[in-house]
Image: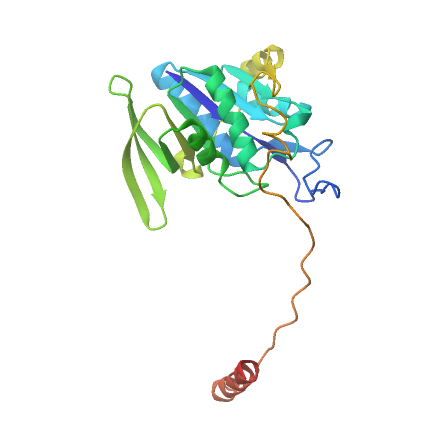
Length: 262
């Protein structure tokens, strides 16, 4: 069994800076962490590795500093790492990002399962995982809270998918892609042995050329979503407070509402 985990390095602080020329996040030199939801994806891959002897590969796309996220994932128990690091990828929206990651997964090949966190904390779109599945024409299940079983002979994974008012049980044909929520597990801490192994382990470094992508397919040129303007919304006006007995307060409130309805 081969499992591919897609992760993203995100800013650790809420005080993010925007490049005024490109309207994209400035990531270089900013303290960063693995996207919190991706930690659950890593943990679930490690658990499947322990249950089925799976081979696990972690993939990320980002600047040179994103190597730290890959090494942390390796220290947690994943086997191999691939880093997409190329200025051509800078400014990629969710479409271009999912395309690049899909090409990586195609290049790795012979996989059974792709695991992503449900969304990234900096973008909050929850689009990259489903986008990868779309580019690869894979069955997908989002918001997975539990993997019940994997039947490699039948090529089926049985899981629970979180809904607003409960959950549903699905059987999905492999190979497939899933996105996971925090209810699925409790991420472990890296061991000293894991940290030492990850520190010296080699990481595959790929550019758009290794993926047979041209510059018009990724980065700002390949992103159909464009940020036209970024601004801070004006502060809201102060609300009104009505004091007094309930009957009189209600009359005042109704009177104010009528003024705004006319």
